Image 1 (cartoon, rainbow, N blue to C red):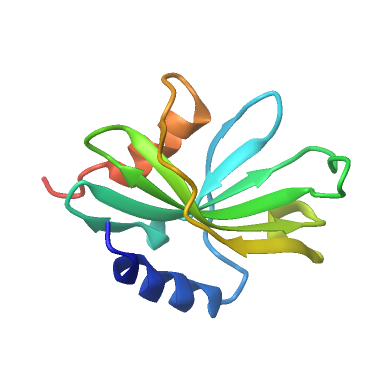
Image 2 (cartoon, rainbow, N blue to C red):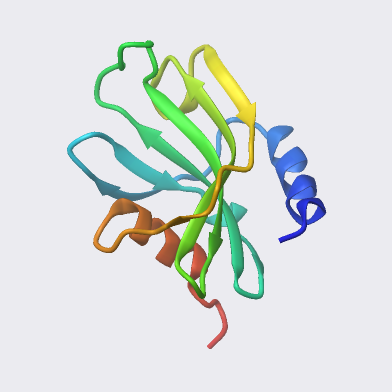
Length: 128
């Protein structure tokens, strides 16, 4: 996917207030996953969306939640992270401990995981 297709929504969403409408996806042993369904951008087989991983207790670095702008290849069931921030409090509140714009390599979405549930929600077809 061309870089220019995800830059505009990324920059727009960075300027939006922190009070996003998060939808609970599921809980794992490590964290709870939330998706901002209103942020889903679809372009054919591609979907981009904001996700939050909320940890029950801070990790060794003091991270309590992470917000990522994730891109999915819906047809081939792959994903990559385009932007990531780590926060000191739950649901991306508190201090920003780090942030990074990146294009991680494509990775397969593993079956029966929070990743697959998130991809399914981002890739679902809104048309009847």
